[in-house]
Image 1 (cartoon, rainbow, N blue to C red):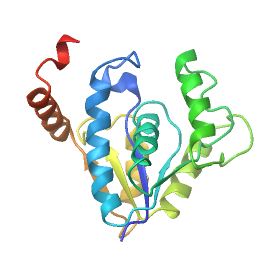
Image 2 (image 1 turned 30 degrees about the vertical axis):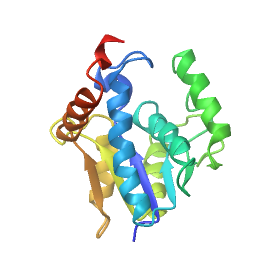
Image 3 (image 1 turned 60 degrees about the horizontal axis):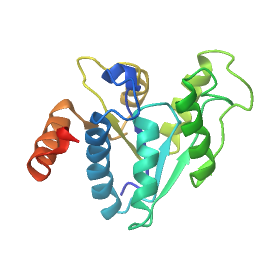
Image 4 (image 1 turned 180 degrees about the vertical axis):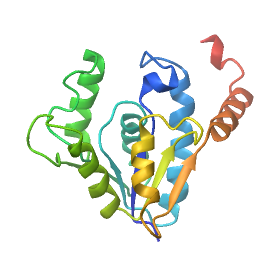
Length: 185
C-alpha cells in the first residue's frame, strides 16, 4: 500500500508555459487530480513535494482542493531555504503562500543554496521517506525531473508511476467533450 507518494514533474517553461493563467495548467492539474484520487482511494495519506515551480506547486493546489473531500495531507520539503528567491515575483508569492498552507513545511538544509548536492540530498530524502513516486514526464525528453527519475529508478523495488503526454491528451479530449467552449473563455 502506498501511504506516502512523491509527486514531481517539469518546470512550467519546460512545458512552454510562461504564465500562471495558461489554460493548459488546467489539463495538467486535472491529470494529477485523477491519479491522486486513485491513490487516495487505495490508502494514500501524504503527498510529498519539494516545492519546485510548475508541476509540484500545481500538485499542492490540487491536494489542497482534494482536502475538501478526502483525508489527505501535503508536505513541502525544499532542498534549502529561499528556494523561490530567483523566481518571477508571482511564483515567489505562490510558493510563499503554499509554504504556509501545506500541512508540513521544512527545508532539508536550513541555509541558502550552496551547491547541487542539496538537490541530490533532497531526492534521496524524498525517496527514503516515500513508498513510490508519480512523475509527469516524457521519457524521451525528461527535462529537470529526469534527475529525480534517475535517482528513483536506481532504488530496488521503488515504484515509479507516470503521467505521460498521452494521459494529458486524454484529459484534453475529455475536457473538450465536457466543456466545448473551454477555449473560448
